[in-house]
Length: 434
Image (cartoon, rainbow, N blue to C red):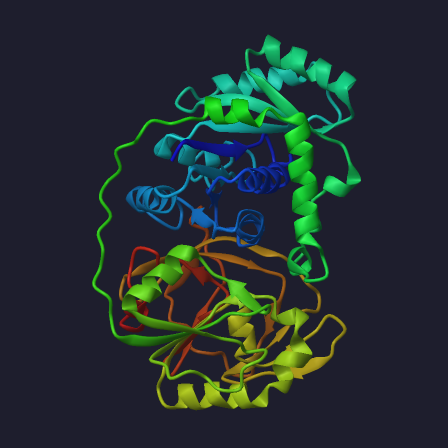
């Protein structure tokens, strides 16, 4: 690896995703093999990264995993790349509690220099104070330069350069204020709509960065010497037959989770939208995604619904998260109140009416004492059934230890809930032993 850097910002909405998308595509166009990473549990940005770079993006998250695991992930996925680029989350120092879990903490622990992206739409020389504060607030990290976003033109950029010089922060260029460079809405599904020409968008940003940003200087400032990392322990492959749903409706997965499943046996992918037969399985995984955008197709695929019901009736292990859990309900009700029958494995209904965002880290404590870490992100809700479903958690809490009502249902060997679990460094089969 020749260079490594993290793209951070003073706050959300500063332009991290825009800049990350563009520089990934630009460096790919220049012939580099670029490995993207994403701080936090986000599923949407990593899909941007993959489309821009051609490489799967890996989540790095201190709530979901241990520091050693993050080092192993970073070593494993960056070791064969020319350049490693990590997109931060929220503001640089924003964590789940103070700085804990923040982009700055990840940069510190993994020894990654930082490029700060600053939204300069409504400021000029005053940005010097922002830059001075961010470079001096926490000396354990290294901010090597700034790229300004939403810049009106060269005259505006000259004011910003003067501010950067006053703060002793190298100014590496800017992204112009152009409507066509704005990231599309992040509402579920829209960013991945097949009708949206992502390649055109990525190339447009790449061209703007190539024109207005000193990318060679960035690579010079973020060049790295070999770093001693802990050895990665390989595990013997298992013999399970594992089937994972993957299509436009179900695609919220972590690279590390899939890698652990591959260690347990042979993985086969299937589509609840298109396939009518469930592959021979010892474990089925239905991840989250966008089922609400494909309700007619999912509801019409009666053959696969029956295959899943038969599998669960035979005692087969099934794990369903968020959108996957909704698919297992009797029905999903859309925003207009129309009811679409689903598999009926869970005797309850999910609804998109009265949408409200449920968001945050979760710790699920099981009666055995085991704790599982995860993340909740959804707009839907579950209508209270006549008889509450069995909940296998003794309690669920958020990042600050507050109790939240996020159950993990279990019917036969089917385990389902809104929480996206992380098992990149543990055995998911332990969930059935608790």
